[in-house]
Length: 102
Image 1 (cartoon, rainbow, N blue to C red):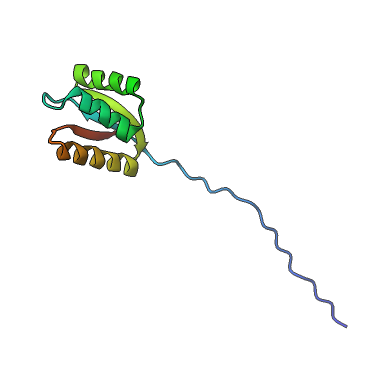
Image 2: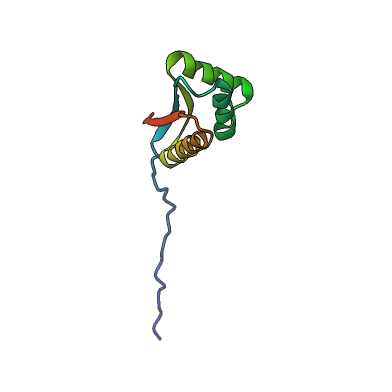
């Protein structure tokens, strides 16, 4: 009578080493035409800032020429920029928003 030995398999847990995606700063740029209140509203609406923080960022944009809205993965940053620029154009403001690698 033949005996059969079952093949033995050992599964080892391995962790895939993934690197986080690169992050991008989203920056608002100053212009001489967009009202300060509109900039504050944009920061609240698209970046989830409370009024106090949005006002601080707006003043930074006004005084220094640009202000940091947040840091996001590339796709999120690009989407936020598109939304901000589209919203500004709908309201006839030339507000510019850009991203740069963090």
